[in-house]
Length: 289
Image (cartoon, rainbow, N blue to C red):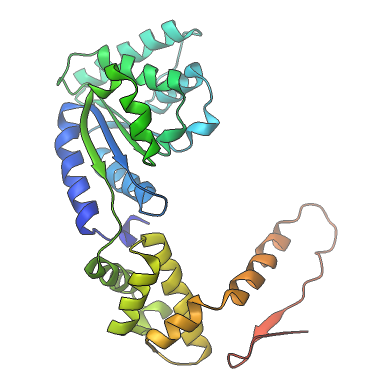
């Protein structure tokens, strides 16, 4: 949920730069290692851009293998019907749609996640899209979110690299942002059980160092620590609890081997599969029956 998004220093800087770049359209590129919040950042940008733009979102380029599929996906999400069948005719349809949206003051913005999965021909297609409009007209803008390999793929294509208006590299959180995100999550969840727990400063230091500032790993350590302190029936989480929680793989391993939620989804009229219920008792491990 966007409400759970924590505007770290790096994320806030990226959003401000994207806001400036999106006014003129063109190509913007945001890269970062896995777990640094690129997909959530895309959702935040989508929520903001949708107020004054026609926004198209491609979540998984791996599912759109051909150039024509990519063009059709963009045209249909933009609210039009593709009449052409070939890549050339579809590009013409997209160009007409782009100009029509600009006249309606709802210029086209295309957001693509996991963009390092785009093929060479699809990247060339993006270059052609941007070349078909007047530079700085704001008629079309493309924002690519991906892993660092995306930069190499772009730089190998001089024509595409020259169209990049903005590049931003997401970095791991600093210690201040680690603490801020944990407290932000607790505050946004309000009256949920999470709001009852307090992380001490030494616990925050340990989570930051072990997660190396990676937001996804920070939240995993946070979740494991809360699960551990609930077992102990306490509300304050210190470094010893965090260390015990993140250093005990048996709990995570067992949970991964017991996907209870899948049993409820079994089709047909057959009786559900038998389930063995495990319960943790006083931190002494898992006992089953």
